Length: 237
Image (cartoon, rainbow, N blue to C red; front, top):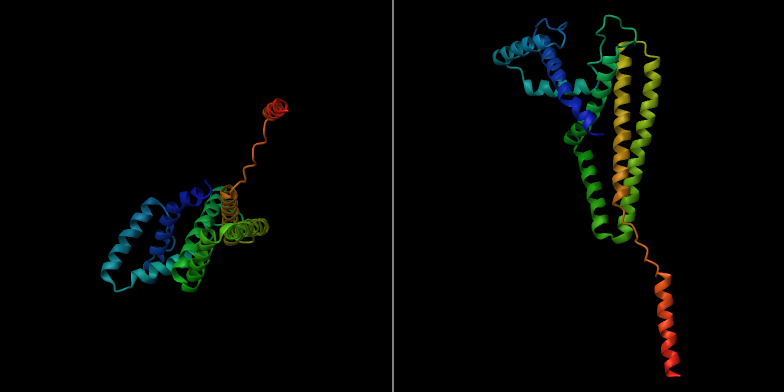
Protein backbone atom coordinates (compact mmCIF):
# COMPACT_ATOMS: atom_id res chain seq x y z
CA UNK A 1 0.00 0.00 0.00
CA UNK A 2 2.86 2.36 0.84
CA UNK A 3 4.44 2.09 -2.59
CA UNK A 4 1.11 1.90 -4.40
CA UNK A 5 0.31 5.54 -3.55
CA UNK A 6 3.17 7.15 -5.49
CA UNK A 7 2.83 4.65 -8.30
CA UNK A 8 -0.91 5.39 -8.48
CA UNK A 9 -0.17 9.02 -9.23
CA UNK A 10 2.82 8.25 -11.43
CA UNK A 11 0.99 7.82 -14.73
CA UNK A 12 -1.08 10.96 -14.13
CA UNK A 13 2.00 12.98 -13.28
CA UNK A 14 3.91 11.71 -16.28
CA UNK A 15 1.09 12.83 -18.56
CA UNK A 16 1.38 16.31 -17.11
CA UNK A 17 5.17 16.24 -17.36
CA UNK A 18 4.98 15.22 -21.00
CA UNK A 19 2.50 18.02 -21.72
CA UNK A 20 4.60 20.67 -19.95
CA UNK A 21 7.77 19.39 -21.61
CA UNK A 22 6.26 19.65 -25.08
CA UNK A 23 5.01 23.14 -24.27
CA UNK A 24 8.48 24.33 -23.25
CA UNK A 25 10.03 22.82 -26.36
CA UNK A 26 7.43 24.54 -28.55
CA UNK A 27 8.01 27.84 -26.72
CA UNK A 28 11.72 27.64 -27.53
CA UNK A 29 10.76 27.12 -31.15
CA UNK A 30 8.56 30.23 -31.16
CA UNK A 31 5.09 28.74 -30.60
CA UNK A 32 2.67 30.71 -28.39
CA UNK A 33 1.50 27.93 -26.06
CA UNK A 34 2.62 29.21 -22.66
CA UNK A 35 -0.89 29.94 -21.33
CA UNK A 36 -2.42 26.59 -22.31
CA UNK A 37 -3.69 24.54 -19.38
CA UNK A 38 -3.36 20.76 -19.15
CA UNK A 39 -6.81 19.87 -20.53
CA UNK A 40 -7.62 17.00 -22.88
CA UNK A 41 -8.17 19.40 -25.78
CA UNK A 42 -4.92 21.27 -25.16
CA UNK A 43 -2.98 18.01 -24.71
CA UNK A 44 -4.11 16.96 -28.19
CA UNK A 45 -3.29 20.39 -29.68
CA UNK A 46 0.18 20.54 -28.14
CA UNK A 47 0.94 16.98 -29.23
CA UNK A 48 -0.05 17.82 -32.82
CA UNK A 49 2.15 20.93 -32.86
CA UNK A 50 4.97 18.97 -31.24
CA UNK A 51 4.80 16.22 -33.88
CA UNK A 52 4.85 18.81 -36.66
CA UNK A 53 7.83 20.60 -35.08
CA UNK A 54 9.64 17.31 -34.61
CA UNK A 55 9.36 16.54 -38.31
CA UNK A 56 10.21 20.03 -39.53
CA UNK A 57 13.16 20.94 -37.26
CA UNK A 58 16.51 19.49 -36.37
CA UNK A 59 16.10 19.84 -32.61
CA UNK A 60 17.52 17.02 -30.49
CA UNK A 61 14.19 16.07 -28.91
CA UNK A 62 15.62 13.22 -26.82
CA UNK A 63 17.92 15.66 -25.07
CA UNK A 64 15.16 18.19 -24.46
CA UNK A 65 12.96 15.49 -22.90
CA UNK A 66 15.71 14.69 -20.40
CA UNK A 67 16.05 18.39 -19.65
CA UNK A 68 12.31 18.68 -19.09
CA UNK A 69 12.33 15.81 -16.60
CA UNK A 70 15.13 17.55 -14.71
CA UNK A 71 13.12 20.77 -14.75
CA UNK A 72 10.08 18.95 -13.39
CA UNK A 73 12.10 17.27 -10.64
CA UNK A 74 13.54 20.65 -9.62
CA UNK A 75 10.04 22.08 -9.18
CA UNK A 76 9.83 24.41 -12.17
CA UNK A 77 6.21 23.31 -12.67
CA UNK A 78 5.18 24.85 -9.34
CA UNK A 79 3.60 28.05 -10.57
CA UNK A 80 0.51 30.07 -9.79
CA UNK A 81 -2.48 28.69 -11.68
CA UNK A 82 -5.42 30.31 -9.86
CA UNK A 83 -4.66 33.94 -10.67
CA UNK A 84 -3.75 34.79 -7.06
CA UNK A 85 -0.11 34.20 -6.24
CA UNK A 86 -0.65 34.50 -2.48
CA UNK A 87 0.47 31.13 -1.08
CA UNK A 88 -3.08 29.78 -0.80
CA UNK A 89 -3.80 26.80 -3.03
CA UNK A 90 -6.88 24.62 -3.48
CA UNK A 91 -7.47 21.26 -1.80
CA UNK A 92 -7.06 19.57 -5.20
CA UNK A 93 -3.71 21.30 -5.70
CA UNK A 94 -2.58 20.24 -2.21
CA UNK A 95 -3.48 16.61 -2.93
CA UNK A 96 -1.92 16.77 -6.40
CA UNK A 97 1.39 18.16 -5.14
CA UNK A 98 1.42 15.74 -2.20
CA UNK A 99 1.25 12.75 -4.56
CA UNK A 100 3.57 14.49 -7.03
CA UNK A 101 6.14 14.80 -4.26
CA UNK A 102 6.03 11.03 -3.79
CA UNK A 103 6.41 10.46 -7.52
CA UNK A 104 9.32 12.90 -7.76
CA UNK A 105 11.06 11.12 -4.89
CA UNK A 106 10.77 7.74 -6.63
CA UNK A 107 11.72 9.00 -10.09
CA UNK A 108 14.47 11.25 -8.75
CA UNK A 109 16.06 8.38 -6.82
CA UNK A 110 16.01 6.07 -9.83
CA UNK A 111 17.31 8.85 -12.08
CA UNK A 112 20.17 9.61 -9.69
CA UNK A 113 21.29 5.98 -9.66
CA UNK A 114 20.98 5.81 -13.45
CA UNK A 115 23.04 8.96 -14.10
CA UNK A 116 25.51 9.06 -11.20
CA UNK A 117 27.97 6.19 -11.60
CA UNK A 118 29.64 6.81 -8.22
CA UNK A 119 26.35 6.61 -6.32
CA UNK A 120 25.30 3.56 -8.33
CA UNK A 121 28.60 1.83 -7.53
CA UNK A 122 28.21 2.68 -3.84
CA UNK A 123 24.63 1.39 -3.83
CA UNK A 124 25.56 -1.88 -5.56
CA UNK A 125 28.64 -2.32 -3.38
CA UNK A 126 26.67 -1.81 -0.16
CA UNK A 127 23.99 -4.25 -1.32
CA UNK A 128 26.66 -6.84 -2.17
CA UNK A 129 28.34 -6.49 1.23
CA UNK A 130 25.01 -6.87 3.04
CA UNK A 131 24.12 -9.93 0.98
CA UNK A 132 27.55 -11.44 1.68
CA UNK A 133 27.19 -10.88 5.41
CA UNK A 134 23.84 -12.64 5.43
CA UNK A 135 24.98 -15.53 3.22
CA UNK A 136 28.43 -16.23 4.65
CA UNK A 137 28.74 -14.32 7.91
CA UNK A 138 26.82 -16.75 10.09
CA UNK A 139 24.91 -15.44 13.11
CA UNK A 140 27.32 -12.53 13.55
CA UNK A 141 27.01 -11.50 9.91
CA UNK A 142 23.23 -11.74 10.07
CA UNK A 143 23.20 -9.62 13.22
CA UNK A 144 25.38 -6.94 11.57
CA UNK A 145 23.28 -6.88 8.40
CA UNK A 146 20.07 -6.73 10.42
CA UNK A 147 21.37 -3.89 12.58
CA UNK A 148 22.50 -1.95 9.51
CA UNK A 149 19.13 -2.50 7.86
CA UNK A 150 17.24 -1.31 10.93
CA UNK A 151 19.50 1.75 11.20
CA UNK A 152 18.79 2.56 7.54
CA UNK A 153 15.05 2.14 8.04
CA UNK A 154 15.19 4.28 11.17
CA UNK A 155 17.09 6.96 9.27
CA UNK A 156 14.39 7.03 6.59
CA UNK A 157 11.68 7.44 9.21
CA UNK A 158 13.53 10.23 11.06
CA UNK A 159 14.34 12.13 7.86
CA UNK A 160 10.78 11.70 6.63
CA UNK A 161 9.32 13.10 9.87
CA UNK A 162 11.74 16.05 9.76
CA UNK A 163 10.86 16.80 6.12
CA UNK A 164 7.14 16.64 6.88
CA UNK A 165 7.37 18.96 9.90
CA UNK A 166 9.56 21.45 8.03
CA UNK A 167 7.23 21.39 5.02
CA UNK A 168 4.17 21.97 7.22
CA UNK A 169 5.78 25.09 8.65
CA UNK A 170 6.65 26.36 5.17
CA UNK A 171 3.13 25.67 3.88
CA UNK A 172 1.55 27.61 6.76
CA UNK A 173 3.71 30.67 6.04
CA UNK A 174 3.99 30.44 2.23
CA UNK A 175 3.95 33.81 0.46
CA UNK A 176 3.62 32.42 -3.06
CA UNK A 177 1.80 29.49 -4.66
CA UNK A 178 5.14 28.01 -5.73
CA UNK A 179 6.28 27.87 -2.09
CA UNK A 180 3.02 26.23 -1.01
CA UNK A 181 3.14 23.64 -3.81
CA UNK A 182 6.78 22.81 -3.09
CA UNK A 183 5.90 22.41 0.60
CA UNK A 184 3.15 19.90 -0.15
CA UNK A 185 5.52 18.01 -2.44
CA UNK A 186 7.97 17.83 0.47
CA UNK A 187 5.16 16.53 2.71
CA UNK A 188 4.51 13.77 0.18
CA UNK A 189 8.19 12.92 0.02
CA UNK A 190 8.45 12.82 3.81
CA UNK A 191 5.39 10.61 4.10
CA UNK A 192 6.82 8.21 1.52
CA UNK A 193 10.11 8.00 3.41
CA UNK A 194 8.32 7.22 6.68
CA UNK A 195 6.13 4.61 5.00
CA UNK A 196 9.04 2.88 3.30
CA UNK A 197 11.08 2.98 6.52
CA UNK A 198 8.27 1.37 8.52
CA UNK A 199 7.64 -1.21 5.81
CA UNK A 200 11.32 -2.18 5.51
CA UNK A 201 11.84 -2.20 9.27
CA UNK A 202 8.83 -4.48 9.71
CA UNK A 203 10.10 -6.86 7.05
CA UNK A 204 13.53 -7.01 8.69
CA UNK A 205 12.07 -7.72 12.12
CA UNK A 206 9.78 -10.43 10.74
CA UNK A 207 12.74 -12.08 9.00
CA UNK A 208 14.70 -12.48 12.23
CA UNK A 209 15.04 -16.11 13.36
CA UNK A 210 13.13 -16.76 16.54
CA UNK A 211 14.57 -19.14 19.11
CA UNK A 212 12.08 -21.86 19.98
CA UNK A 213 12.35 -22.69 23.71
CA UNK A 214 12.43 -26.32 24.60
CA UNK A 215 9.07 -27.61 25.73
CA UNK A 216 9.29 -28.27 29.47
CA UNK A 217 8.42 -31.82 30.47
CA UNK A 218 4.91 -32.34 31.69
CA UNK A 219 4.86 -32.83 35.49
CA UNK A 220 2.68 -35.92 35.36
CA UNK A 221 5.00 -37.68 32.91
CA UNK A 222 8.05 -36.96 35.05
CA UNK A 223 6.27 -38.16 38.18
CA UNK A 224 5.26 -41.49 36.59
CA UNK A 225 8.79 -42.01 35.25
CA UNK A 226 10.23 -41.47 38.73
CA UNK A 227 7.78 -44.01 40.19
CA UNK A 228 8.92 -46.57 37.62
CA UNK A 229 12.56 -45.98 38.56
CA UNK A 230 11.75 -46.41 42.24
CA UNK A 231 9.83 -49.65 41.58
CA UNK A 232 12.85 -51.12 39.77
CA UNK A 233 15.06 -50.33 42.75
CA UNK A 234 12.60 -51.94 45.16
CA UNK A 235 12.36 -55.12 43.05
CA UNK A 236 16.16 -55.48 43.02
CA UNK A 237 16.55 -54.99 46.73
